[in-house]
Image 1 (tube, helix red, strand yellow):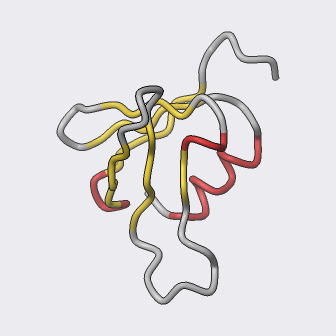
Image 2 (image 1 turned 30 degrees about the horizontal axis):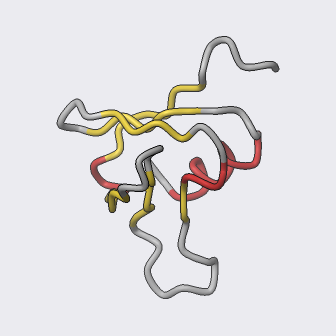
Length: 75
């Protein structure tokens, strides 16, 4: 997975999930639940996803295997 694919998913404004190599899945219901390092950052190798309980997870791009958009979201 690369950072541009995740940025594109965020720009679409549709809830999505990130599936990890170990099978874990992280829900991103809205852009406020994900942080991508700024384009000027030296290293853009991760994202941070926060769940509804306020717990944040640091996700390596190398371990993210897919993006799945919520099926019942408007197109």
